[in-house]
Every structure is written in C-alpha cells, then in structure tokens.
Length: 189
Image (cartoon, rainbow, N blue to C red; front, side, top):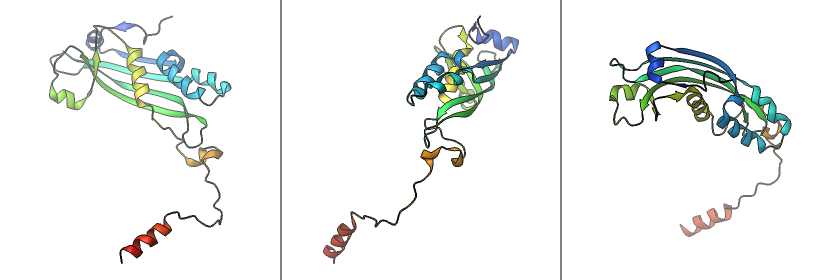
C-alpha cells in the first residue's frame, strides 16, 4: 500500500491546489533514515534495542503554495516531528532525541539558472530534477540533515553511569612541564 508520501506529485499542481498533507507514519517508512539509525545503533551491539525504534512515530504537516507572485516557484511550508533514536555521546546509552523541523522551502527546477535574489534570501531552496517529486524524499532528507552529529541527553542527570565524573583522588599531580618552565625562566635571566 503506497502512502501519500511515496507517490509522485507535481509541485506546481500541489501549489495550484494549495494542498495540505498531514500524515502520521513510522521511522521504518524512511529507508535511508532507517539504514543510518540501524548502523548507529548496531555499534552498541544491543539487538533488543534494534527493533523498538522502527515503530517510533513521525508526524508530518506540509502545505503548498506559490513562493512568488508570478506563480513560477512552488513553495512548501510545514512541520516534521519525530522522536529519533540516538546514542548519547556522553553516556553511550540509546535514547529518544526529539526532533522538530520547521520547513520553508522553495521548490526550484535544477535547470533554472538563477532565482529572484529576494526569494533566495527569504527561503531555503530545494532543487527538483524532474517534473514530479516524492514527498518522502523531501521529508527524509530534512530529518537526516536535522540530526545532530553528537546527540546528548538534554539533562546531564539523565545520562547513564559513563557520564558521571570520576571521584578525584588526592594523588600528587604530575606536572610534566614544571621543570621546563623553571629551566626557561633560568635561561631568560
């Protein structure tokens, strides 16, 4: 069964109709995103955590209109929200990273040489190489681009035991360059 996101649409037709698309899906519906998440989680070697994340919800609301008065450049605005599985870089535990993306994209033909500079400064452009596009590609790329390189829990106390600092001991501190500093001061006198 094809979802509305997997069907091909003409951005111009969607803009003409001022189409609004609302969809609630799962992370597993986004193949490239699922591969990236599976590869990240696979590093931990915890297969029990592997399958639960695939059913995590993704909520999408896209609204189409024209970005310019001449009605030549379609625009999509909207919001994508998902609780992405991620590995906390402080404690190395799997957690749900809340991801919310506000979209405002001008859908520009890749063969266009130049677009209006005012429009280019007000919205981000998304190049389309054909007359039709799949919305799943746009949403999936937006989710991938929004994921942080080093996700961490919002609160440090939410982290597991690896994130807690080690207790300080009263061992004598080793200062390897203390002698060097003294020697430099001696030669500079």
